[in-house]
Length: 359
Image 1 (cartoon, rainbow, N blue to C red):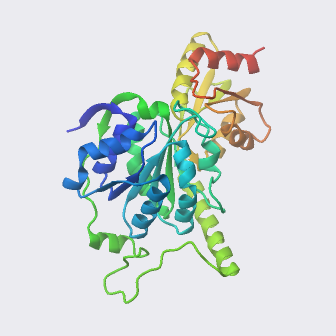
Image 2 (cartoon, rainbow, N blue to C red; image 1 turned 90 degrees about the horizontal axis):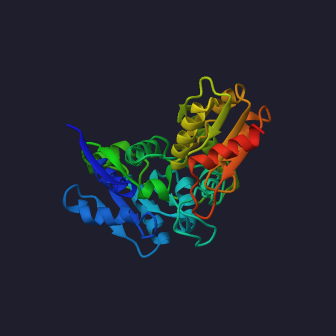
Image 3 (cartoon, rainbow, N blue to C red; image 1 turned 45 degrees about the vertical axis):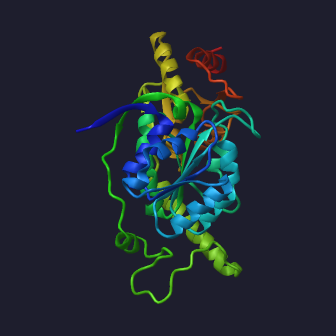
């Protein structure tokens, strides 16, 4: 029987972490995602599932605890908001370099700097282009609903272990704070120590009978070996690009104009499209669910059928670069965005589309 609750997106992440059998959460409070840690502390999963929940002394400490847990083959995660994610970037690069699975949740807020506690989507570059150092990639999932905030906890850990790669859930303050009906997943048991050893033979714990434990590190002093590591990473990223692209479409079959938006903004765009359709304007919505790997081929195909593409983002124009690369000049691509925590209404989006393409 389905268990249905009304809850915030941040709260849903916490409940999902417990129910999906997460081994550990390590975090530090920051608005607008503090409810993740607060809900976990309220639920006290250490008494029910054995999950470790720890408020670290800083964001840097939290991401390094994630590194330690992941190195042992455990399912571990952290969450933060934009300035906190910036502090975690060195550790995230280390996770990618050591090929460790982990889930990192970012409920974006306005910046740069300390900025505002209001919602934003200005961490797109940081998540999809590699905000830390080195040639690495994160798998980036973008939820638009509280249900997706729930489901992507399980999906994120599945992908993290499948590819031995960190996964970021790039949410925003809107979807983290809004309340919606959500269907919670069934409880899944945490893996036993024997299952961890069998499923993660690469982990520091290794297998029973090993005379020497595995060494987990991203350090390699010999340039040839470091280059070989990077070549292997790039091959893995190609496989992810081929197999893990996710997206959704709304009214694109006969669209003459296309709006591309991600996260909660896509929901506002959908309302704008419904209103424009009533006026006879044929507009469709394309929502990337994986921001990396980006649905380049799918946007390229749609770009051949429309007169113009408008990207709508809570930033100065970041995803627009990937959309332009996808269509390669075949169709005009324009941007509309609000910054500083201001969220556009459907009317503004309608006006922007008409101003750019229907003068």
